[in-house]
Image (cartoon, rainbow, N blue to C red):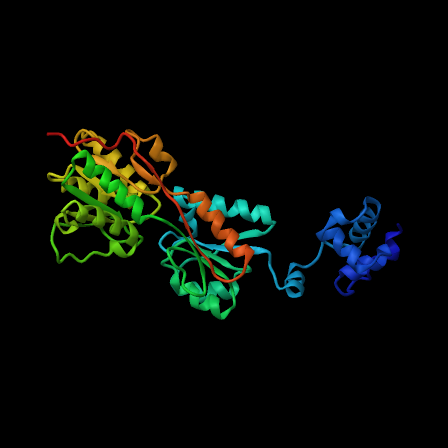
Length: 363
């Protein structure tokens, strides 16, 4: 092919797909298939179009043009918890596994994946500017995204028990497993517990001694887990009001997130024979810091967690916990978003793992 005949003159308008089709003497639809669906075009025809594109300096269809013609970007946005931010999102083992599930489905569907800031004050801006077809909110706390997404006619999938009438949701059945974990401790003979929960907010840890008039922030962050503990204690004739509670600060960095909170917990262990940690990272930090102090789990006290992080199976001792299908949660969220249709609410089961961190209390 004589490239001199088809190269545009200097200063000419930008080369388009129509120019390529004309130079290769094919229809515009055929030229488009070469770039977007090459399997539909024979080898000789594809090579002819590619040669014409190279000669004209055509790099490929403008993605903005595809967006205007199809109404789709072929990408979904994942919004990490606001307290994490995008930079810390990758350091948290739970969210790493969650994101792996999302990305597997994106690869299956042939769509892209973008991370969007989860800060509440940037919600409207993020909805308007992110080049995505919908959003997966990694935390039920990100309700500030739902209203602007609805106004922009963008589908939303929320991680939580109910995304409301305008958003799909994916949750895990955490109340019943947390009740079963507490019942497991009760069956072993434990009656004095210290409950520990991690908050999303960056704030100093707080120790709450037993009492009815405590001001707790934590129950709102994991209501099902708190309800499970309360139900098991109530059925055994006990009350959560009689148990001390520690609220720890949450970040993906274990030392910064839980160090002070776990030290506060161990300083106030008192006569408690079991620690109920409402997530695994917190429970694993309890095991590690207890060992530093010369305490032995479960000889001195038992520990349970919740989440089923991979580290919980190989900790010393292995952690008794409830195993969430974290990767399946991410995959289900992405699938709900990409399949479209009216909002749906999916609840996934949780599996108990009774391991070496729990035993009967010492006499």
